[in-house]
Image (cartoon, rainbow, N blue to C red; front, side):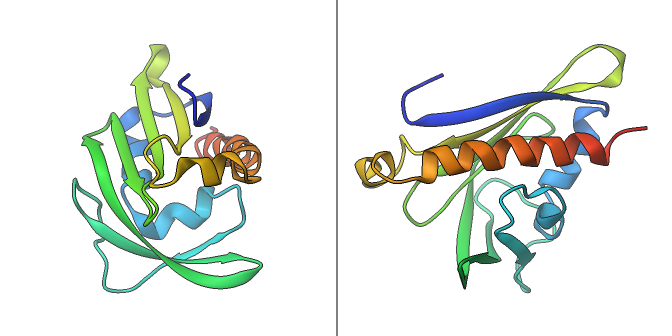
Length: 145
């Protein structure tokens, strides 16, 4: 793992196509969010994400706020990542494995942030690692038989 990244990986009992459909639909993000901060997709955004798509989310971390994201990495059924205004990224990588399952890796990457040292000095790397673990647990449960 690179410096200025935290990530986790889980095996999910579903093919990459099913998982990707969930990730590419911003309205579904609150279903898997382990941070408790993602409330809803804002109206007027795309129903399905593609490279360059911009989508807004209603958020809450103490106070309510809105965030605009841009999809900056995209490979159908394998990779999707979006960045916030500060340039840091949330990345999802999907790798098919045996028995129709998928290895799913979620990464919080602040190496691309405008001022990464501010994130280095904050609680966000630790807090986001905990949220990633919870998110992947939720995703795994959604696809349990």
